[in-house]
Length: 424
Image (cartoon, rainbow, N blue to C red; front, side, top):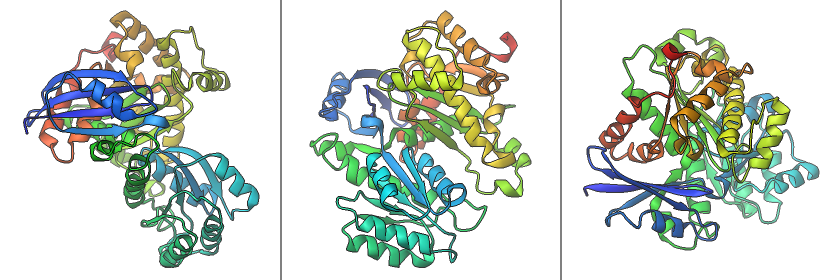
Protein backbone atom coordinates (compact mmCIF):
# COMPACT_ATOMS: atom_id res chain seq x y z
CA UNK A 1 0.00 0.00 0.00
CA UNK A 2 1.66 3.21 -1.20
CA UNK A 3 -1.11 5.72 -0.42
CA UNK A 4 -4.37 6.26 1.45
CA UNK A 5 -7.40 8.40 0.76
CA UNK A 6 -8.23 10.17 4.02
CA UNK A 7 -11.78 11.54 3.94
CA UNK A 8 -13.69 13.85 6.26
CA UNK A 9 -17.45 13.59 5.76
CA UNK A 10 -18.85 16.91 6.92
CA UNK A 11 -22.40 18.18 7.13
CA UNK A 12 -21.89 20.43 4.09
CA UNK A 13 -18.74 19.24 2.30
CA UNK A 14 -16.83 15.98 2.03
CA UNK A 15 -13.07 16.63 1.93
CA UNK A 16 -10.51 14.11 0.70
CA UNK A 17 -6.71 13.99 0.91
CA UNK A 18 -4.50 11.54 -0.95
CA UNK A 19 -1.50 10.84 1.30
CA UNK A 20 1.66 8.92 0.36
CA UNK A 21 2.91 6.22 2.71
CA UNK A 22 5.07 6.17 4.69
CA UNK A 23 6.30 9.73 4.07
CA UNK A 24 3.04 11.60 4.61
CA UNK A 25 3.48 13.61 1.42
CA UNK A 26 0.19 15.23 0.43
CA UNK A 27 -0.32 14.11 -3.16
CA UNK A 28 -3.74 15.65 -3.88
CA UNK A 29 -6.84 17.12 -2.27
CA UNK A 30 -10.44 17.29 -3.45
CA UNK A 31 -13.90 17.98 -2.12
CA UNK A 32 -17.52 17.41 -3.08
CA UNK A 33 -20.88 18.39 -1.57
CA UNK A 34 -22.13 16.00 1.09
CA UNK A 35 -25.33 14.29 0.01
CA UNK A 36 -27.51 14.13 3.16
CA UNK A 37 -29.58 11.33 1.61
CA UNK A 38 -26.50 9.12 1.16
CA UNK A 39 -23.10 10.38 2.31
CA UNK A 40 -21.27 7.64 0.37
CA UNK A 41 -22.07 9.54 -2.82
CA UNK A 42 -20.05 12.50 -1.57
CA UNK A 43 -17.10 10.24 -0.72
CA UNK A 44 -17.14 8.69 -4.18
CA UNK A 45 -17.36 12.12 -5.82
CA UNK A 46 -14.52 13.57 -3.72
CA UNK A 47 -12.20 10.64 -4.44
CA UNK A 48 -13.17 10.17 -8.11
CA UNK A 49 -9.87 11.64 -9.32
CA UNK A 50 -7.71 9.57 -6.98
CA UNK A 51 -6.10 6.23 -7.89
CA UNK A 52 -7.68 3.05 -6.55
CA UNK A 53 -6.39 3.13 -2.95
CA UNK A 54 -7.96 2.23 0.41
CA UNK A 55 -10.24 4.81 2.04
CA UNK A 56 -10.27 5.76 5.72
CA UNK A 57 -12.76 8.34 6.94
CA UNK A 58 -14.13 10.34 9.81
CA UNK A 59 -17.58 11.87 9.92
CA UNK A 60 -19.53 14.76 11.40
CA UNK A 61 -22.36 14.49 8.85
CA UNK A 62 -25.81 15.18 10.18
CA UNK A 63 -24.32 17.38 12.90
CA UNK A 64 -22.10 14.59 14.22
CA UNK A 65 -22.94 12.39 17.18
CA UNK A 66 -25.82 13.81 19.26
CA UNK A 67 -25.24 12.90 22.88
CA UNK A 68 -27.27 13.48 26.05
CA UNK A 69 -25.66 13.29 29.50
CA UNK A 70 -27.61 12.07 32.54
CA UNK A 71 -25.83 12.37 35.88
CA UNK A 72 -26.31 12.63 39.62
CA UNK A 73 -25.49 16.23 40.51
CA UNK A 74 -24.99 18.92 37.87
CA UNK A 75 -21.67 20.30 39.14
CA UNK A 76 -20.14 16.86 39.71
CA UNK A 77 -21.38 13.80 37.83
CA UNK A 78 -23.18 15.58 35.01
CA UNK A 79 -20.22 17.92 34.46
CA UNK A 80 -17.81 14.98 34.41
CA UNK A 81 -20.02 13.23 31.89
CA UNK A 82 -20.27 16.41 29.82
CA UNK A 83 -16.49 16.68 29.61
CA UNK A 84 -16.14 13.01 28.68
CA UNK A 85 -18.68 13.51 25.90
CA UNK A 86 -16.79 16.47 24.49
CA UNK A 87 -13.52 14.54 24.63
CA UNK A 88 -15.17 11.95 22.40
CA UNK A 89 -16.09 14.52 19.79
CA UNK A 90 -19.79 14.34 20.57
CA UNK A 91 -22.20 17.22 20.28
CA UNK A 92 -23.84 17.47 23.69
CA UNK A 93 -27.52 18.26 23.04
CA UNK A 94 -28.87 17.80 26.56
CA UNK A 95 -27.63 17.53 30.17
CA UNK A 96 -29.88 16.26 32.98
CA UNK A 97 -28.99 15.86 36.65
CA UNK A 98 -30.74 14.08 39.48
CA UNK A 99 -33.60 11.56 39.36
CA UNK A 100 -35.40 11.54 36.02
CA UNK A 101 -39.12 12.24 36.30
CA UNK A 102 -41.70 12.33 33.49
CA UNK A 103 -40.85 15.91 32.57
CA UNK A 104 -37.13 15.19 32.48
CA UNK A 105 -37.71 12.14 30.29
CA UNK A 106 -39.79 14.21 27.88
CA UNK A 107 -37.06 16.87 27.69
CA UNK A 108 -34.50 14.17 27.05
CA UNK A 109 -36.60 12.72 24.23
CA UNK A 110 -37.07 16.15 22.62
CA UNK A 111 -33.29 16.56 22.36
CA UNK A 112 -33.27 13.50 20.05
CA UNK A 113 -29.88 12.08 21.11
CA UNK A 114 -28.08 9.31 19.27
CA UNK A 115 -26.75 7.99 22.58
CA UNK A 116 -27.17 8.69 26.31
CA UNK A 117 -24.14 8.83 28.60
CA UNK A 118 -25.44 7.63 31.98
CA UNK A 119 -23.18 8.65 34.87
CA UNK A 120 -23.64 9.07 38.61
CA UNK A 121 -21.82 8.53 41.88
CA UNK A 122 -18.17 7.86 42.63
CA UNK A 123 -17.04 4.24 42.80
CA UNK A 124 -18.56 2.67 45.91
CA UNK A 125 -20.48 5.86 46.67
CA UNK A 126 -24.07 7.01 46.15
CA UNK A 127 -25.97 4.64 43.85
CA UNK A 128 -29.70 5.26 44.29
CA UNK A 129 -29.96 7.95 41.59
CA UNK A 130 -28.05 5.81 39.09
CA UNK A 131 -30.39 2.89 39.81
CA UNK A 132 -33.46 5.14 39.49
CA UNK A 133 -32.33 6.66 36.20
CA UNK A 134 -31.50 3.28 34.70
CA UNK A 135 -34.99 2.03 35.55
CA UNK A 136 -36.53 5.21 34.11
CA UNK A 137 -34.63 4.83 30.83
CA UNK A 138 -35.50 1.13 30.67
CA UNK A 139 -39.17 2.00 30.85
CA UNK A 140 -39.13 4.30 27.81
CA UNK A 141 -40.26 2.88 24.48
CA UNK A 142 -37.69 3.18 21.71
CA UNK A 143 -34.83 4.07 24.07
CA UNK A 144 -31.57 5.09 22.42
CA UNK A 145 -28.29 3.28 23.18
CA UNK A 146 -26.72 3.99 26.58
CA UNK A 147 -23.06 4.26 27.55
CA UNK A 148 -22.97 3.39 31.26
CA UNK A 149 -20.14 5.23 33.03
CA UNK A 150 -21.21 5.61 36.66
CA UNK A 151 -20.55 3.93 40.01
CA UNK A 152 -18.85 0.64 39.11
CA UNK A 153 -20.03 -1.02 42.33
CA UNK A 154 -23.51 -1.33 40.77
CA UNK A 155 -22.50 -1.39 37.09
CA UNK A 156 -23.55 -4.97 36.38
CA UNK A 157 -26.86 -4.52 38.20
CA UNK A 158 -27.68 -1.29 36.37
CA UNK A 159 -26.65 -2.71 32.99
CA UNK A 160 -28.94 -5.70 33.56
CA UNK A 161 -31.89 -3.38 34.29
CA UNK A 162 -31.31 -1.46 31.06
CA UNK A 163 -30.91 -4.61 28.94
CA UNK A 164 -34.06 -6.10 30.46
CA UNK A 165 -35.87 -3.01 29.14
CA UNK A 166 -34.47 -3.56 25.65
CA UNK A 167 -31.93 -0.74 25.86
CA UNK A 168 -28.57 -1.36 24.09
CA UNK A 169 -25.86 -0.84 26.72
CA UNK A 170 -22.10 -0.36 26.47
CA UNK A 171 -20.45 -0.44 29.90
CA UNK A 172 -17.42 1.74 30.66
CA UNK A 173 -15.38 2.76 33.68
CA UNK A 174 -16.70 5.55 35.88
CA UNK A 175 -16.04 9.01 34.45
CA UNK A 176 -15.64 10.25 38.04
CA UNK A 177 -14.23 7.37 40.09
CA UNK A 178 -13.33 9.71 42.96
CA UNK A 179 -14.06 13.33 43.80
CA UNK A 180 -11.62 15.52 41.90
CA UNK A 181 -10.44 12.75 39.56
CA UNK A 182 -11.86 12.80 36.05
CA UNK A 183 -11.27 9.64 34.00
CA UNK A 184 -12.93 10.06 30.58
CA UNK A 185 -10.86 7.66 28.45
CA UNK A 186 -12.99 4.53 28.91
CA UNK A 187 -16.24 6.42 28.32
CA UNK A 188 -14.71 8.16 25.32
CA UNK A 189 -13.83 4.79 23.74
CA UNK A 190 -17.32 3.47 24.47
CA UNK A 191 -18.98 6.53 22.92
CA UNK A 192 -16.87 6.06 19.80
CA UNK A 193 -17.84 2.37 19.66
CA UNK A 194 -21.54 3.26 19.92
CA UNK A 195 -21.13 5.91 17.22
CA UNK A 196 -19.56 3.42 14.84
CA UNK A 197 -22.07 0.67 15.58
CA UNK A 198 -25.36 2.55 15.79
CA UNK A 199 -24.85 5.73 13.71
CA UNK A 200 -22.34 4.78 11.04
CA UNK A 201 -23.44 1.12 11.01
CA UNK A 202 -27.12 2.11 10.87
CA UNK A 203 -29.02 3.58 7.96
CA UNK A 204 -29.31 7.24 8.97
CA UNK A 205 -26.41 8.39 6.80
CA UNK A 206 -26.29 5.62 4.18
CA UNK A 207 -27.36 2.07 3.57
CA UNK A 208 -24.14 1.40 1.66
CA UNK A 209 -22.03 -1.08 3.72
CA UNK A 210 -18.82 0.64 2.59
CA UNK A 211 -19.51 3.51 4.98
CA UNK A 212 -19.03 1.29 8.04
CA UNK A 213 -15.82 -0.08 6.50
CA UNK A 214 -14.38 3.40 5.89
CA UNK A 215 -15.31 5.39 8.99
CA UNK A 216 -12.95 5.07 11.95
CA UNK A 217 -14.20 7.86 14.22
CA UNK A 218 -16.00 11.18 14.53
CA UNK A 219 -14.31 14.15 12.86
CA UNK A 220 -13.51 16.08 16.08
CA UNK A 221 -11.76 12.98 17.44
CA UNK A 222 -9.66 12.71 14.28
CA UNK A 223 -8.81 16.40 14.29
CA UNK A 224 -7.76 16.31 17.95
CA UNK A 225 -5.37 13.46 17.12
CA UNK A 226 -4.02 15.57 14.25
CA UNK A 227 -3.58 18.59 16.52
CA UNK A 228 -1.70 16.39 18.99
CA UNK A 229 0.62 15.29 16.17
CA UNK A 230 1.12 18.96 15.22
CA UNK A 231 2.02 19.87 18.81
CA UNK A 232 4.51 16.98 18.89
CA UNK A 233 6.10 18.32 15.68
CA UNK A 234 6.63 21.66 17.46
CA UNK A 235 8.22 20.07 20.52
CA UNK A 236 11.33 21.93 21.60
CA UNK A 237 10.16 25.34 20.45
CA UNK A 238 9.82 28.10 23.07
CA UNK A 239 5.99 27.90 23.04
CA UNK A 240 5.04 24.50 21.56
CA UNK A 241 1.36 24.67 22.55
CA UNK A 242 -1.23 24.65 19.75
CA UNK A 243 -4.81 25.93 19.46
CA UNK A 244 -6.95 25.12 16.41
CA UNK A 245 -10.24 26.86 15.58
CA UNK A 246 -12.22 24.88 13.00
CA UNK A 247 -15.26 26.74 11.64
CA UNK A 248 -17.72 24.57 9.72
CA UNK A 249 -21.17 24.86 8.25
CA UNK A 250 -22.88 23.35 11.31
CA UNK A 251 -20.38 23.52 14.18
CA UNK A 252 -17.27 25.35 15.33
CA UNK A 253 -14.71 23.33 17.27
CA UNK A 254 -11.75 24.54 19.33
CA UNK A 255 -8.83 22.22 20.05
CA UNK A 256 -6.06 22.85 22.55
CA UNK A 257 -2.82 20.96 23.19
CA UNK A 258 -0.92 23.14 25.67
CA UNK A 259 2.79 23.30 26.43
CA UNK A 260 3.04 20.33 28.83
CA UNK A 261 5.91 21.80 30.86
CA UNK A 262 4.23 25.16 31.41
CA UNK A 263 0.91 23.57 32.27
CA UNK A 264 2.45 21.06 34.68
CA UNK A 265 4.05 23.94 36.57
CA UNK A 266 0.63 25.51 37.12
CA UNK A 267 -1.31 22.38 38.09
CA UNK A 268 -2.87 22.36 41.53
CA UNK A 269 -4.59 19.59 43.45
CA UNK A 270 -7.97 20.84 42.22
CA UNK A 271 -6.85 20.39 38.61
CA UNK A 272 -6.26 16.64 38.84
CA UNK A 273 -7.75 14.95 35.81
CA UNK A 274 -7.01 17.71 33.30
CA UNK A 275 -6.60 15.93 29.94
CA UNK A 276 -3.44 16.69 27.99
CA UNK A 277 -5.44 17.48 24.84
CA UNK A 278 -8.96 18.88 24.90
CA UNK A 279 -11.62 20.41 22.75
CA UNK A 280 -14.96 22.16 22.86
CA UNK A 281 -17.62 21.50 20.21
CA UNK A 282 -20.17 24.27 19.59
CA UNK A 283 -23.22 22.90 17.80
CA UNK A 284 -24.89 26.32 17.40
CA UNK A 285 -21.97 28.06 15.68
CA UNK A 286 -21.73 27.47 11.93
CA UNK A 287 -21.73 29.55 8.77
CA UNK A 288 -24.34 27.53 6.85
CA UNK A 289 -26.75 25.18 8.62
CA UNK A 290 -26.27 26.98 11.95
CA UNK A 291 -26.04 30.55 10.65
CA UNK A 292 -29.29 31.63 12.33
CA UNK A 293 -28.20 30.21 15.67
CA UNK A 294 -24.79 31.85 15.20
CA UNK A 295 -26.38 35.28 14.79
CA UNK A 296 -28.43 34.71 17.93
CA UNK A 297 -25.32 33.67 19.85
CA UNK A 298 -23.44 36.71 18.56
CA UNK A 299 -26.21 39.01 19.81
CA UNK A 300 -26.19 37.31 23.22
CA UNK A 301 -22.38 37.56 23.46
CA UNK A 302 -22.27 41.13 22.11
CA UNK A 303 -20.00 40.01 19.28
CA UNK A 304 -20.45 42.11 16.13
CA UNK A 305 -21.22 40.42 12.81
CA UNK A 306 -19.85 42.98 10.39
CA UNK A 307 -21.39 41.61 7.19
CA UNK A 308 -23.15 38.76 5.45
CA UNK A 309 -20.12 37.15 3.83
CA UNK A 310 -19.07 33.68 5.07
CA UNK A 311 -15.78 35.09 6.39
CA UNK A 312 -17.67 37.66 8.47
CA UNK A 313 -19.74 34.87 9.99
CA UNK A 314 -16.59 32.81 10.46
CA UNK A 315 -14.89 35.53 12.47
CA UNK A 316 -17.93 35.75 14.75
CA UNK A 317 -18.07 31.96 15.14
CA UNK A 318 -14.35 31.76 15.95
CA UNK A 319 -14.58 34.60 18.47
CA UNK A 320 -17.53 33.12 20.35
CA UNK A 321 -16.09 29.59 20.23
CA UNK A 322 -12.78 30.78 21.71
CA UNK A 323 -14.61 32.62 24.48
CA UNK A 324 -16.58 29.50 25.33
CA UNK A 325 -13.47 27.35 25.18
CA UNK A 326 -11.74 29.60 27.70
CA UNK A 327 -14.75 29.40 30.01
CA UNK A 328 -14.61 25.59 29.78
CA UNK A 329 -10.85 25.68 30.42
CA UNK A 330 -11.42 27.74 33.57
CA UNK A 331 -13.41 24.82 35.02
CA UNK A 332 -10.20 22.77 35.10
CA UNK A 333 -8.65 25.10 37.65
CA UNK A 334 -5.10 26.54 37.50
CA UNK A 335 -4.03 23.95 34.92
CA UNK A 336 -6.72 24.94 32.47
CA UNK A 337 -5.24 28.07 30.94
CA UNK A 338 -3.27 26.35 28.18
CA UNK A 339 -5.08 28.05 25.31
CA UNK A 340 -3.75 31.46 26.35
CA UNK A 341 -0.13 30.33 26.26
CA UNK A 342 -0.14 28.67 22.84
CA UNK A 343 2.61 29.60 20.42
CA UNK A 344 0.64 28.58 17.32
CA UNK A 345 -3.02 29.23 16.46
CA UNK A 346 -4.41 27.48 13.37
CA UNK A 347 -7.54 28.74 11.63
CA UNK A 348 -9.33 25.94 9.79
CA UNK A 349 -12.51 25.58 7.77
CA UNK A 350 -13.60 26.67 4.31
CA UNK A 351 -14.23 30.30 5.28
CA UNK A 352 -10.53 30.66 6.08
CA UNK A 353 -9.06 28.29 3.48
CA UNK A 354 -10.67 30.13 0.58
CA UNK A 355 -9.97 33.69 1.76
CA UNK A 356 -7.11 35.75 0.33
CA UNK A 357 -4.23 36.92 2.45
CA UNK A 358 -5.41 40.51 3.16
CA UNK A 359 -8.84 39.23 4.19
CA UNK A 360 -7.25 36.65 6.49
CA UNK A 361 -5.01 39.28 8.09
CA UNK A 362 -8.07 41.43 8.73
CA UNK A 363 -9.99 38.45 10.13
CA UNK A 364 -7.16 37.60 12.50
CA UNK A 365 -6.99 41.21 13.64
CA UNK A 366 -10.73 41.23 14.40
CA UNK A 367 -10.51 38.05 16.46
CA UNK A 368 -7.37 39.32 18.18
CA UNK A 369 -9.06 42.59 19.13
CA UNK A 370 -11.82 40.83 21.06
CA UNK A 371 -11.74 41.92 24.66
CA UNK A 372 -14.15 39.19 25.72
CA UNK A 373 -11.34 36.62 25.85
CA UNK A 374 -10.68 35.42 22.30
CA UNK A 375 -8.06 38.12 21.73
CA UNK A 376 -5.96 36.74 24.57
CA UNK A 377 -5.49 33.44 22.75
CA UNK A 378 -3.98 35.16 19.71
CA UNK A 379 -1.97 37.75 21.66
CA UNK A 380 1.40 35.97 21.71
CA UNK A 381 0.78 33.37 19.01
CA UNK A 382 1.70 32.97 15.38
CA UNK A 383 -1.50 32.53 13.35
CA UNK A 384 -1.60 30.25 10.29
CA UNK A 385 -4.33 28.74 8.12
CA UNK A 386 -4.78 25.04 7.42
CA UNK A 387 -5.26 25.77 3.70
CA UNK A 388 -5.03 22.14 2.58
CA UNK A 389 -7.06 20.75 5.50
CA UNK A 390 -4.51 18.22 6.72
CA UNK A 391 -5.41 17.90 10.40
CA UNK A 392 -8.30 15.44 10.03
CA UNK A 393 -6.23 13.36 7.60
CA UNK A 394 -3.27 13.37 9.99
CA UNK A 395 -5.52 12.23 12.81
CA UNK A 396 -6.78 9.32 10.73
CA UNK A 397 -3.17 8.28 10.16
CA UNK A 398 -1.85 8.51 13.73
CA UNK A 399 -2.86 5.01 14.82
CA UNK A 400 -1.47 2.82 12.03
CA UNK A 401 0.79 5.29 10.19
CA UNK A 402 2.31 7.69 12.76
CA UNK A 403 5.29 8.51 10.53
CA UNK A 404 2.95 9.62 7.75
CA UNK A 405 0.91 11.70 10.22
CA UNK A 406 4.07 13.46 11.38
CA UNK A 407 5.14 14.12 7.82
CA UNK A 408 1.73 15.50 6.89
CA UNK A 409 1.66 18.12 9.68
CA UNK A 410 5.24 19.27 9.16
CA UNK A 411 4.23 21.71 6.44
CA UNK A 412 1.51 23.21 8.61
CA UNK A 413 3.92 23.66 11.51
CA UNK A 414 6.10 25.81 9.27
CA UNK A 415 3.36 27.51 7.23
CA UNK A 416 3.63 31.18 6.33
CA UNK A 417 1.86 33.08 9.10
CA UNK A 418 -1.19 35.24 8.62
CA UNK A 419 0.07 37.26 11.57
CA UNK A 420 2.72 36.93 14.25
CA UNK A 421 3.55 38.68 17.53
CA UNK A 422 6.45 40.51 15.89
CA UNK A 423 4.16 41.99 13.23
CA UNK A 424 1.51 43.24 15.65
